[in-house]
Image (cartoon, rainbow, N blue to C red):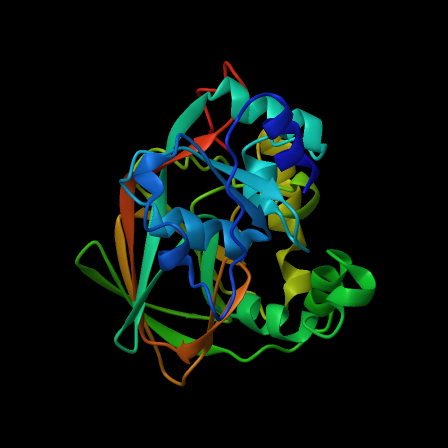
Length: 286
């Protein structure tokens, strides 16, 4: 890895460990407190699994973009050149960010970017065979195939308050930028101790386009929303969310399909991880 060689040439001791069946993430970071930085190289699933394993360890993590989707790196403003990434490691500036914890079927895992049940998990499942050929475009192609997604009634408990909403999916966002920097929904702050919960109520993904347009307009300060009240989505903030569905819906967290389905519970882990960012980066409102 070029970044590792650059750090060695700068006088750093670098230990490289490759995650896999023989080396799960917990074993790979068992001695992390003896290191000053951790580089998590891979897609969002790899980065978030490392971050979750290091929660509250106070060792900064660099999200090194090396997978099909690198939304965590995008939201953190990471460059894509090894020399620039190595320089950020040497500078050591970091910001403290919330993580999410997902509990389902007696299992617990973590996520940094986004988790969800329903339409987005179906999209990720459909994209698996396309990623090798099309890269990040595979997610767009698979989304366009979701013209008639399954609907269900979601029974939610939002910070202790029950709600029932019909829809095609529930998304829990910690960061706010999707592929190509498109905003997921308004401004989302990954350091405020809350998720943005987005219930997709539209009949298909094409009906969500007005919400994307309004989010872009808001990001660019182009005035008031022009599609407000179209009923395609419902959003609210939450520190803890439980989700049940009238029928089992698949789950995803940071692009990884979960072997379990709904029901699940997600909770915020406030300030659980320090991510390396460019010097001067303090406001990560995305």
